[in-house]
Length: 133
Image (cartoon, rainbow, N blue to C red; front, side, top):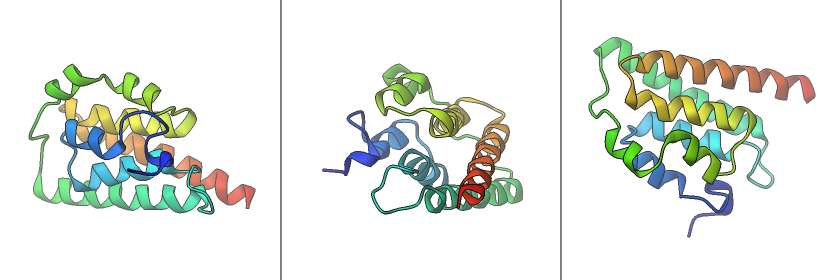
């Protein structure tokens, strides 16, 4: 059983990533965004940094290799819409916004724009965490 900070009583974040057919980098970015600020003894900034690193890796690879979504997420949307996933995971604020951007990415031909949006949100959260520290 996964710790509660990965699902908050909703679906397991790994299952969500699999059903949305997120690749390794996007799946890990989602995992760390969902977990940010929830893991006891773990500063939120550390998880935001991890999410940022995975998204930066994805962007570097995507631009270098001109990748496009290999599965439009229609099966995932039949299972649970992005907003319903965020609600089930109890996400709010930046965690919710980042998760929605990542879950929309596979359903769009503008995948890079969604990932860029998630990166911008993470940068904003990191700036807040640094200012509060």
